[in-house]
Image 1: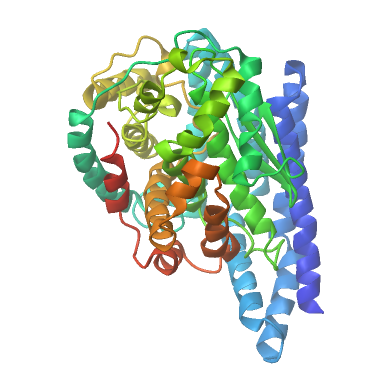
Image 2 (image 1 turned 30 degrees about the vertical axis):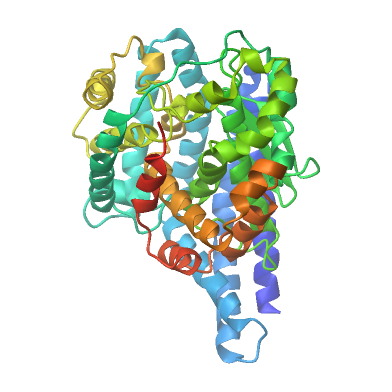
Length: 493
């Protein structure tokens, strides 16, 4: 009975979290702009409520009673799994309890207001409109790190929120090695020009994009696709997954890969919701690196393959009202798999994308260590872009203001993108070893169901039962390694 009480309380918490996510989704997709201030207070109150409930004495007492019950009753069904749930939630509570409720509420309210300020600054291409707000968020992140505590540097405690046990030193070594491998690939690569000779109206792009999620296994009864300034996905319940994209009339591939990326995230969340234990601490995503691996796998390993487009190319031509002569297949594939140094991370090819992440990682690390100032960011950003890409930034919108993450105070988040690339390539390689006929099935039938089932078995339905390293060994037979990512990227032109 005590464990049932724990699950009941946890379910209540999850309902509040889903409501919180709904408020945030609505603020980015449907809410009128004048509602921002009131919404920030609503989200802050919900955040405060969740924090108070999840760190309060009542929940702690319920957890302790459940633990004592499990320790004294060895004949309880699924004993090991239930103990694991309580261990996970206890560990989470210990960290959450280090943050004062007032701080959590302040952080929630300021990040919600910060996003609209970031959007306006980006629109006006004026960093000064956002710099003071960003300075506040950096100081909040520093306070958060101090509340958490750390052994070597503050940034480690923030990374741990997204990728448990990863450290700045570990990431620095990993990224330095990856950068060395990428340099010759980029040097030998060739950029191909955009083959779209005329603009594709957004309504024609929508018809193709809206068909993608269900083709990959995210059916319409489980999800919906909307437009936002920055593509994202979120879970509002076990059978309610929301994804967004944005459209560019001069390049329909931007929205397509955005949809495939966010669909990958939502497919993972659907798989977690299908777990027998759901909702529970075990039926949650393992890490943001693993979460990102699911989106990058569908976007890059599948979506950028020639086999995927052998099947979908004629469908896309029909949707876009184009003739084959207006968009030859070879030119189309060359463009999809070309490598070009670009200013914008979300438009970067899979090879140079990792260099964008390394740039942000280096800046974040120095910001949190207070080695650099917010006021210096445009200059530092531009210098790093020149060093890594040989590109000159013309305005802050294509430089330091291009990403939404800092307006969310999500310091420590960016490294998980590169980790996701590493995990995705390794997982896909393991899948192909077990399913060598998949490329042919993909090219002739467009069928990806075997891949989804493999991911459900080896990643989605595992939840938090294992650590990242344990999951990767069980799924691929190896600890995480960047060699499969490097191998896959050598196939780019």
